[in-house]
Length: 114
Image 1: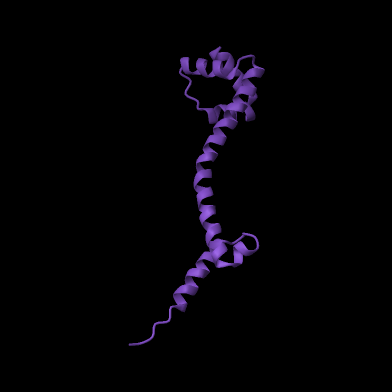
Image 2: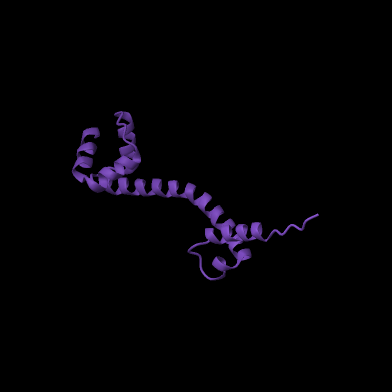
């Protein structure tokens, strides 16, 4: 029976792990054991933060709309209620964009639903 050396497969596996840790600092980039753990944690954080990012943006849009609507003398909740009753089909992202980039259009929108 011939001898099987597994160095090639091991080297390839380690190389792949170290390739994934590009940009990490110190031992986490060069040491395979530390790199493997760093990749596991990075993956977990990436997964959870993809979901958190959606929440964060929704909060940001709410804050922007509230600030712009209060300048018009109407609080956020009341504005959203009026928009819903008047069947205005703009979502929070678009309302926030209007409030930031085109305040005159936002003002016109608020005055039309008021």
